[in-house]
Every structure is written in C-alpha cells, then in structure tokens.
Length: 441
Ligand code: UGA
Image (cartoon, rainbow, N blue to C red; front, side, top):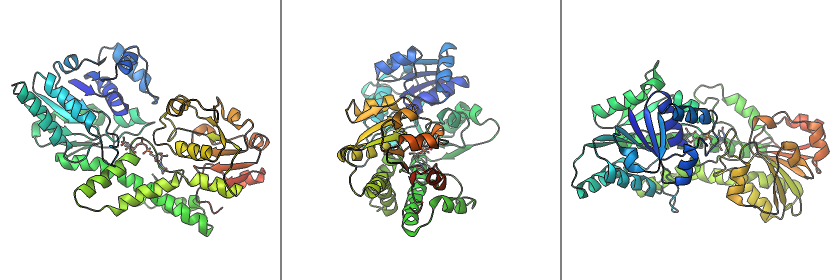
C-alpha cells in the first residue's frame, strides 16, 4: 500500500520504517527541512536501537522516502498517517496546532480519496476536528473527496520502539466504517501474522484508550514511589516489597519500580492533558492530579536525600551524575529527572560531572555550555574529583561497578542510587555510604 507519514519523530519515523520493512511504499514528510536532509543522507536524528539499519535499508530498497513537499508526499496516497507532536499547551492541555496544520495541508493537497489515520496522542474528539478541518479546506477548493478519519494510537516505548512496532501486543483501531477497519487491518497484518491482535472500537474510545494506558502505567509508578516514601520512613525496603507483590498476576512485575520519577515526552504531559480534558468535561480527576503531584515530588527526592546527608544545601561540592536520559537505551532527556536534579544542584551552588552513554549531546543541546557542568566520556571520568555519586538512569553499564574505584574516587564516599540498582550492604562493606529510594535509610 502507498502510505504517507506526516512527522518524522519517534512515532512517525519508526512506524514509517517498519511499514516499509513489511513491504509498503512509505513517504515521510516533515516541515523541518534540516531533519529531512539528514534523513535523505541516511543520518538518523535520534538514537533508537535497530532504527538506523532499518531506515537505511528500506531507503536503499526504494520503499522509504523523505520529503518536505506535501504535494509529492500525498500523490497517490491510500493511507495518510498523522504522527506529529502534541506538546503541552501551557494550560495543561494538549497543543493541537501541529495536528490541525497537517489536516489543513492534507485538505489543501489531497487529490484522491484516502483514509487519514491519526497516530498522535490527542484528546477525545480530535479525529472529528481533523475530519472537519480537511473537509472545510476541500470545500474551499470546491473539491469533493471521500476522506475517512480513523484513530490508531501508538503504544511503542522509546528504547524498544522498533521491536514494539514490529511485534505489537495489540493494534487499536478506532473507526466507524467496516471498509476502513479492513484497509487498516490489511496495512498492519504482517506485524501480527500469527495472532489476531486487532482491537476494533469507535473513534472516541480509541482516542481515550491511549491516555488510559499511559495514565494507568504512570499511576503504577507513582503508587510505588509513594510506597517507597512510606518504606523509607518506617524502616522497610521497597525492593523487598516489590518482590513480594510482583508475583501476583493481578499486580504483575512491570512498572512497579520505585525510582527518581517518570520522565519522557509522554507520561508527564499525557497525565496532565487527561486531567485537563476531564476538568473541561466537568469531571474532577483527583487520582490523575495525585499521580502527577507524586511524580513532581519524586523528581526532587534525590536532592532531598542529598540535603539530608549533608545537613543542608551542598554548596561548593562536586557531584558525579551517572545517566541523563529519562530511561536507558535512549538519548532522550525530555522531562528527565536528571534535569530537575541538575537545576537543584546548581541552585545550591554545586558543580556536576555527567556521564551518559547516549544522551550527552541532547543534554548539551538542552542546557547549553556552562561552567558548573562537565560532560564526561566515561563513568570513571565523571568520578574524577567528585565528592558524591548520583545514579539517575539505570543503564546496564552502571550495574556492576568497580567498588574499589568508587571508594578511591568519590571524595565523601557516598552514593545516591536513584534507581535502586545497587546492594546497600555490599556498598557499605566497601566503606561507601548508600542512599536508595525507599530503602529504609
Ligand atoms: C510510554 C509508554 O510506556 C508507551 O506505551 C507509550 O507508547 C509512550 O509512553 C508514548 O505515549 O509515546 P516511554 O515514554 O518511551 O513510553 O517510556 P516508559 O518505558 O513507559 O518509561 C517512562 C518513565 O517511567 C521512565 O522515566 C522510566 O524510568 C519510568 N519508570 C518506568 C519507572 O520509574 N518505574 C517503572 O517501574 C517503569
């Protein structure tokens, strides 16, 4: 099938490349000409395992194209996907300007009937707005085309996006026409060849499904962070508690890790946007508000532990930070707990030496060059001349550290473990003071 993908961010680029991989002809379009030039040159603008060979291979095979020209992009399109950003609008809601701008573009340049599929995370009712926008523009052009707008939310995780896209646990389709469901099933069928993983529903339910999934996952995390807070004050260890509740299949092992708080471009904004939409609809959403508030507090918790240890603001001290990305296997620092901690440390007059295997360029882009920030090229280099170590992201390479080296290099012999990856007893046996999240100390 001939697919046009608006947006070359995580969702658009990964989905576009995966659709090309299963044999469709995909053309990705973006308003960012620099990004498109880089993609045309085979340069991948974000780090995602497995993505580079997929993009380059399918581009070389002539199935995956990149352009800034919407006319060329929409020529002969059967399926037109929208995968652009829906950032916060400043009032807690979702900013739909990019989605609606794409709808305008589609209305302006579409020349034959097509199915428009919205993949962006959007409030309930957006598909209808996209439909109305496209039809208003078509009417201005005095053109009549049959355009059906469906909702097909995306559930891929950064760091595992290609795998998630090629092997989805479900494909949610929101539409009203049987023909649209059938076309979309045909589009995605190779991803789910051996299992019927399609879930068909109405458009508005599909739109809400995406928010419900992210909000429930965020709720699990905030719940565990709240338990961790309690554990810390009653002398219990949240890691033991996690092992005690995970085997219950009704609870499950996933998303019950207490830590430095959830970050990324999705959970923080989606929880807020859903609460905002609920309020707009006259429905209070106290649980969602609490999920957000707990996370906000959690992102500042590592600093609280640091202050507790030093008996006040750590002015003049140097901290090594291991990890800047909001989670492992990505270079994304959007909404990352590391950003909150860095700001708190700087406000207190401390200096920071950061190592991250992938995210240092993004960190520099986000924060600029500063005297109180050193970007280091190895975990050991970050420890040079530091007083304390803080682990913010649980990259695999941090899991089995050289404890002798730690003891030698960390001036104050103290580790703040924001992801509970170390054994407190082992560190203490090496003469290193240990603070974890919810570990009774
Ligand atoms: C999330 C969802 O998991 C995807 O299903 C969804 O498609 C995506 O948002 C989106 O809306 O686009 P992602 O933001 O890539 O994916 O990251 P997650 O793996 O969900 O992690 C989010 C945050 O939660 C990270 O900061 C992670 O460190 C934190 N987390 C996760 C915890 O603190 N504890 C846990 O137990 C799990």
